[in-house]
Image (tube, rainbow, N blue to C red; front, top):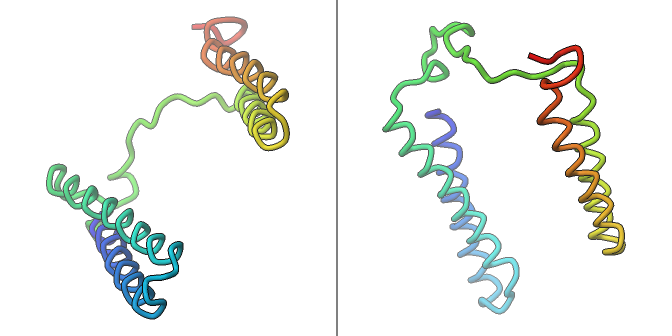
Length: 133
C-alpha cells in the first residue's frame, strides 16, 4: 500500500504543478485545461490521502513485506458461480440501456427491464434447480 500512496500523491502534486504552469503559459484564459489538470491532481491527492489514512489505521499489509508469501494475503473473496450465464445477461442489459441513452430514450426501458430480470436471476440462481442450497 505504501507504493500506491507514493504514486497517487506524486501524481497529484505533478498534475497540480503542471496545471499551474499551464495556467501561466495560457494567461489563465483557457478555461478547460487549467481546471481539468487541477481537478485531476486533486482527485489523485484524494486517493493518496485516503490510502494513507487507511494505511495508518490498518497497519502493515502483506504486500508491504518483501518476504511475504502469496498465501499470506489469501482471504475469502466470496462465492462465485463458474457456470453462471447471468453475468453475461447483466452485461447485455447494461449495453442495451447505455445504447438507449446514447441513441434513443425509447430503447432504455428495454435495457432496464432486462437488467431487472438479470439481477433477479443472478440473485436467486442458488435458490432453485440443481444448485439450490
